[in-house]
Length: 153
Image (cartoon, rainbow, N blue to C red; front, side):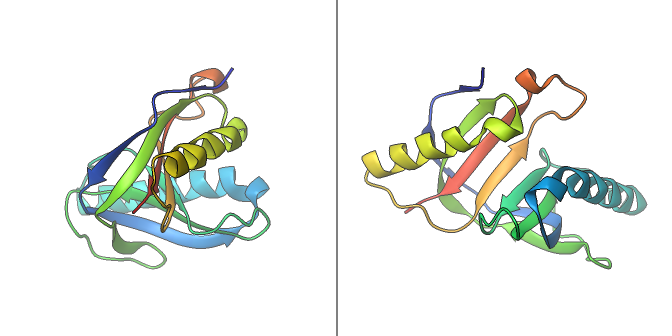
């Protein structure tokens, strides 16, 4: 059964990133994420650089048949772009977050819980939702750890 830690708020500093932004159907997302992470990891190796935090996917919309996603790696400093790998950042912002444990396909209710929490606490969601992945497909679905982050004002 999916489990959510306490929902809370904090101020996040700007984080430099390397990312690939594209559009996809939700059913094609797992393969696209894997391919993108491999491509960016190879580029980081070429640069002799490392991640500075766990990988993420940013959801710029929630149209499951035409998702606008940014698949990225936090990095220690701005790095040069290459082909479809862009240099950018996750902006500084006030965010609501929680740690979710369970299968990715069961996260929708967690987004609902977070939306309710945001409203009940007098906040308003703004911008892009981020999912930060602390482990991956090598773990059982019941043990997948994802931090969900939603900017607010």
